[in-house]
Image (tube, rainbow, N blue to C red; front, side, top):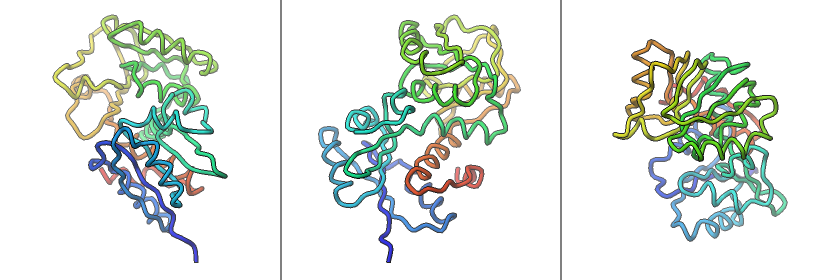
Amino acid sequence: MNQTKKFAVIGNPIQHSRSPELHQAFAKKLNITLDYDKIFSEVPAFKTTVFAFFKQGGQGMNVTVPFKEDAFLLCDVLTDRAKAAKAVNTLWSKEGKIYGDNTDGQGLVDAIHALGWSLQGAKILILGAGGATRGVVLPLAHAGAQEIVIANRTLTRATQLVADLKNQVGSTTLNACALDDLAGEFDLVINATSASLSGDALVLPDTLQFSHAYEMAYGKPSTFLAQAEQRGIPYSDGFGMLVGQAIVSFEIWNGCKPNLADFLSLK
């Protein structure tokens, strides 16, 4: 008789995580039996907790705030996506080694495709130059983006991110600009900052024209999406990305891929 597969998500805090709900929904749809738990870890205990999980027969682990960079550092083998992101949200163990991937960017790409928006030849503007942006540039380039511009309040941070990634994005053009200098026409603007969820609202100037808007966050009012709505532009929050990144993890661990569109109603 097959043993039930054991998975978990680790974070601090962790109660809010919807990963168990999503993975159980995928498993039910595909007739797979698995356990998926939430694991709270104090920051100094992260590495010990991960190793104990795999030693006790755990097969896969998702990683959320604040441990994605720590997870990157403890891996023996990393995917190209993880190397570009310098952060890991998906772990698994094979032959005594810990493997790591970052599925956030592919989750975003799949969510955008599920909306019926094309990325082939697209001009994309990403607001923010933090870890969320670093994690999605490579998958967006692989999906066929013609140009990606990274805009940040501090221009030097955006410039550094472009320098770090420009040799990994193939024929995609990578540029940086300051948020104060936003202008031009884009097929898609992605908000990877937390500003539109806080009082420090991003105001998009009239000099910036765009056809689609995607907010990486979900579940809270967004001034970024409100501005897209005012302009009559198609927009989406980040719930599809959340489902998408979970599906990529699920496929890595279980060898079969749920259909993203089947689970968007869980929102």
